[in-house]
Each structure stands twice: as C-alpha cells, then as structure tokens.
Image (cartoon, rainbow, N blue to C red; front, side, top):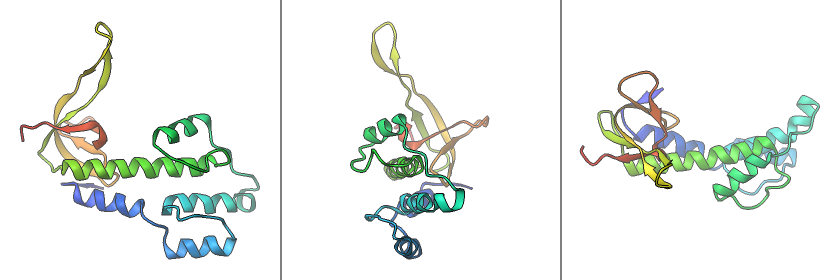
Length: 168
C-alpha cells in the first residue's frame, strides 16, 4: 500500500521497530528463550531460532561475514559472533527501518514535492566523490518507506538517499 505523505509510513515503521508485544514476550518466557529488551522483529527471529530444531529439525544458520560487516557499519554492538543469519537480518532490517523513518520525518514528503536523488559516485578523472543526483517529483510513499516518483517504470528510492530540492 502507498500513501500520499510521510505520516502513515513513519507510524508503521515506528510500530515495526518498537518493543516486543506482550504476547511475544510471554512466548519467549515460556520457551525459556534468553532475551534482553530486543525490538519486536529481533525477538521474533530469536524465538523462531529457538524453535527451529523442533520445527525444522535443524539448527539455525550462523551469521555471515557480510552480515557482520554490515551490522558493524550500522553501529550494532554486542552478541555478534554466535548470532544466526535470521537474527542478524532482523537487526539489519531494524536499523534500516529506523533510518528510513528518521529520513521521512526529516524530509516530511508529500505527493508533488520535488527531491534530489543522491548518487555519490566517484568521479574517475578527479578522484573525488561527485553528486550525480537528479531532481524528481514524489508520487507516493510505500508503507515500508520507499519513495516512488512520477513517470512510472518503478522509479523509486529510499528516503535516506533523498535531499530536499529546495525549490518546493
């Protein structure tokens, strides 16, 4: 579902990144699943990992090196080496969703606004970063925070890659 402005996507993202529900906390407690105030999505992944041997007959896969590196870039601390892929993915989703909500709140976009899509690519001749962004018009904003542009063909970008054009 898409929306005409930033408010509902931010509400949905904040709900998704919020604390675990009472029901999920109760399930984790009944399973004896160790947790420490993780957000809802992360605790859900932890509970699924605890149940994986029973439900799937297999232990959860361990976190990958790429996930570990990305979590470090995102600023995650603690519990990295023994983490599962699913829990690492849940943490990554959590951090990216928070950044998306923050960017939407900062930009406060609505349909019809113009923004610049930032593409920081290296200028091969100068050896510097060059802002190769283009100006686009917002069409709508998805429930996940993805911003869609007028003109069709699936043109879109995450709000963390957008800047106010300053003309609108």
